[in-house]
Image 1 (cartoon, rainbow, N blue to C red):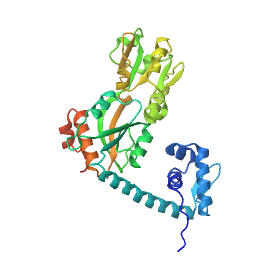
Image 2: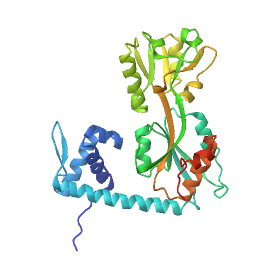
Image 3: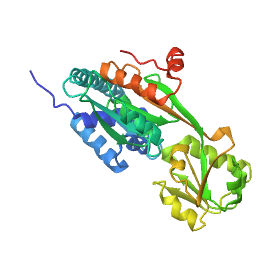
Image 4: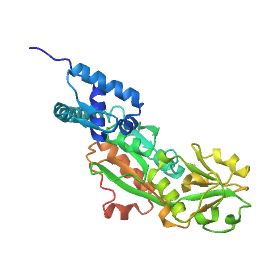
Length: 316
């Protein structure tokens, strides 16, 4: 029997991702590689196969007929491999119990504390592996079984995922104590017209980022300068040097509060950040589901009501 050399999984995954996006830039972002690296992988794949998977030019990317058949087969084979990995991992739960958890860069510290405080009597040697990622990376990693579960801000709905609401809190403004708005219990964007703004990077929460700037634009509000921070602690010195104010989620903002720094919630409900626990809808690991239940009981004060209402639909 003649065995054809099969393309590596990384090349199959590259083709499936590009077929989903039909855009090299977006596909490269999902794969966490550069666009040239993705182009090189697709060329390597097509050279190995001996036929074109994609037709592309400067304006569009499309699957060829052969490419459609190939990608469909890749999706089937990757799904089988993924199920095999999950099954094997679940069999190891009793031997080496590990839960891999993802979270965003500005996750509320109280939620991290709730995660770290979970103790399961059936798994006394349980270890946690924590990974910090941006939201689109978190959901993708849960779907691909790289993460067992994740804490995600404003996740996009996906029928393959179970999403349980944890918290909803307004975006907060961080400012110098002598800022006039610091005297108010809540503040509006209008209070910060013609001053510098420090904002989280767009990829942290694209929807909220755009909503803030679009609302400001419609209201005729404009910052003198728009700065971006990666670490929330970067803004403290900038605020002290009168560079302006910072906008960030509540849990992160409250860590910066001190004598000379004041934190106030934005008054508009449009700027609310909703945080969810996310895991695969078909998650079958007893360990993962037990851990999820225990975490929710610690993270949500009214956990019993949440369970009754169906928010804790985690399968055993």
